Length: 294
Image (tube, rainbow, N blue to C red; front, side, top):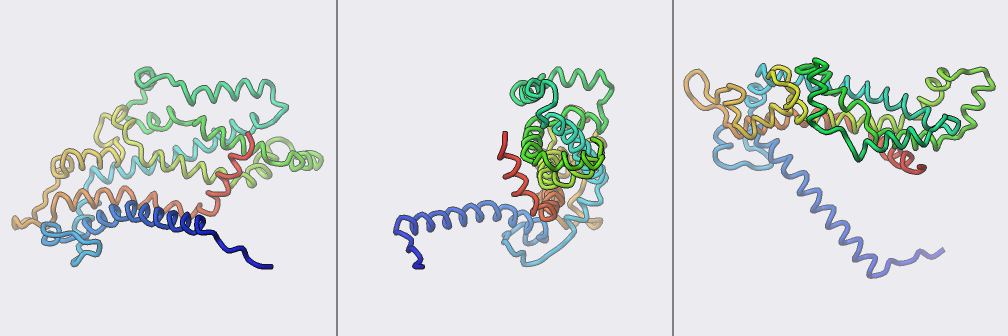
């Protein structure tokens, strides 16, 4: 069977796509590589010229950032918020989506509509702040987790995925004597791994990158997340925020403020990037299947 040759229009379209994707990759990766190179640059290089591949490497910037008590406390708060928030959000979203994905659930469409309504209309920032304050959640990790515990968007994605599952799977389990809890844990949960991994990534990235709610609810510096600290470092200057000198004991400058900022950005970015390869195989499958059936 002869293979059809691509037309000139198709070839031109392919060339355009490859060129566009190449430029997109360059504009995305170059700033990251520049920051990484700046974070490793010595004082002499940082004060003259920064290249993608640093001519001399020093880890003094990372040493000063990682040994700073403010950064360490922010890291702890961010990791605790991300792990605990992702875990609780997955449980509540899964438990909410499962019954509302069943046709026999009473008033299923009504309750689903109530949840979807919150995607477009919320209570507002001031009422939420008053509620958090009245519940004595200020300066606690729960103020960063509970207000965003359930996302209506994630609920819709998980619910649609569950609705696409064959009903015969659960019917066979019921014939074998399985109750609702066993069906939920041993049958539904394993087949929902792709969509749960996808939603977990979304939730974790959101928690890791969030800083505005910490600025509102975490008034004590030791209770703030590392992204808020990084923002203050970049906008206000690293020495003033971190109380960190760029000089050594002899008065010689060993690091530059810009290199300190670059190292701070890197230590807050790399951890979340390391998570994606572990759930990449579930990501595309979960997104596609979760959007098939509404």
